[in-house]
Length: 123
Image (tube, rainbow, N blue to C red; front, side, top):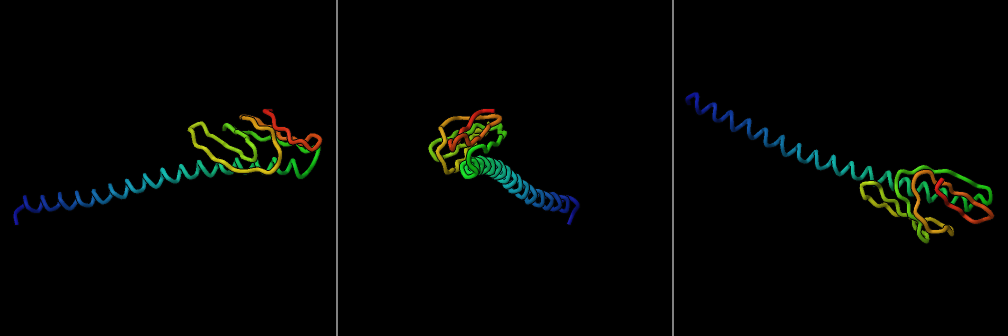
């Protein structure tokens, strides 16, 4: 063997190892991005359930119950459904029990039971 052939084999070997590392890097970046999206969705779902539980608590605990919740997301209440949309357009939907006026809220939200009527207002 001469020096040129050994150098070529080393270059091919190092290139092969680099190629394997590049494939692992691409896989890692893809999975990392998926985990970030999942985390964002789970945080929105948690906020949705927090609002749903606040509405049900106001219904269960009766007149005089009042709670304030802060949200940076757009919250839309429809008949039995809460829809939360984040600033990047991610949507999450959950349900609640009770009779609440439909509306869209953001920022500080006040949920109160006044004479057995659930009132939701921007704070």
